[in-house]
Every structure is written in C-alpha cells, then in structure tokens.
Image (cartoon, rainbow, N blue to C red; front, top):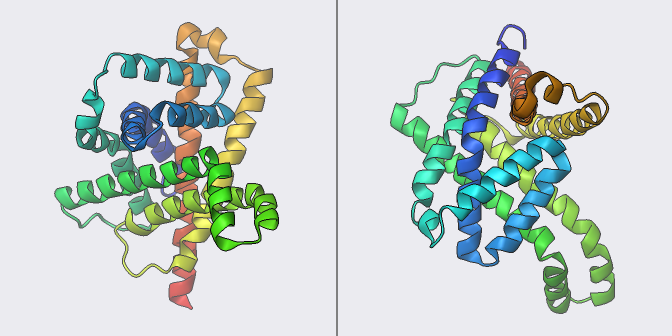
Length: 263
C-alpha cells in the first residue's frame, strides 16, 4: 500500500468522486423517474445515504440535489442522461488508474476504450443500485408475488424480509466485483481472486462510515475549523474513506492473484 501510494490515490479518488456524485445522482433519479415512482425512489435513496453519511454531509448532499432537480424540470434531465453518466464516469476513470497501480500494470487500452469501460461500469453500478433499492422499496409486494407463484406462502412471506437483505448485498457485491474484474488492465482474472477484495472493500467502507459518524458525533471539529465549509470537508473525507476502501480491496485482490499465479 505504501509503495503504490494508496493514501495519495484515495485523496485523488475523493476529488473525482466529489465532482461525480451529483451527476451520478441526477442520472440515477432520472432513470428512476423514467421507470416509475421516481420521487419515492429518490426518497429511499436519500434515506440510505442518511444511514451512512454524517448529518452535515447528508444535509449538503440532499439540499444540493433538491436545488438541481428543482431547476431542471420538464424532463430535461432524462434527455441528457447519457451525457450525465459520461460526466459521472470521471470518478470511474480515476478508479481504473488506481487499480492499475494496485496491480502494477500499465494502461494499454486506448483513451476511447478506457472511457467506454468507465461508462459501462458506471451504468452497471446504476443498474445494480436500482435493483437493490427496488428490492427494499417493493419488498413486500415482490415477496407476495413470489409467494403466490412459488407456493409455501406463509413460510415465504416470513422468510422474505430476511432474505431480501443478503440478496441486496449480493447486488452491491456484484457491482463491486465487476469493477475489480474489468477496471484494471488485467486479463485472465478468476472470480475467486475478485470477490475477497469486493467483500473486504464493502465491509471496510461500512465500518469506516459508521466510525466516522461516531467520531463526528463526539468530536465534530470540522465546523469549528472550516465554518460553513465544514459539511464539504466532511463529505470529502467520506469520499476519501470510500476510495481508500476500494483501493485496499484492489491491493488484496492483487496479492491473491500473485499467489494464485505462483501456485
């Protein structure tokens, strides 16, 4: 990690994530409004952000998103969704470069192909986020539908509220595994050397988010030091921890791939 400058790379990712988060949320809410129940989905999405983000950072995120959507009424965002996802994929390009460093490989793909991979991975991330949110949002309805067609209705309706959590986790895990599989310029990776890093990154990011919330609830020095910019700094710190988790997962996968290759 020290040799690959993981902590410096995480700061770079935080910078790009900060500029990508609002285009990404715009694309996500635009997609949801096209499907159906966009407002309901957006409220559910913000609720999950509130669960992991510190309060001041969440307030900044939700207020800014509301201002953007209010100033772009009439479906204008939906028509520009492809351009929005391209803008949001800038953060994924930084992930590609960071994972290439973790695997000690040079980027041999053309600029256009690299951008295409970043665009597709960002789109895949949006799709799996929608699936995970839909699972929670329409959990009872989907559980009743499946119970009616599969049978064992009482048992299924009792087990479904518990089963939807690991299924949603599997959606998120699949999205992260796709990033580790296709983002770095490495061929011939096996899935056994991808999922450990994906699981570790997810758990590390979750633990870091909870730890940051606890720390800020006791020692919130950012508002005192930065004033009104404190929420921005906290959001940047959260992105830094998120980027660090992704790079640590990439480092783990790189080590496992090296061990498998030697074996």
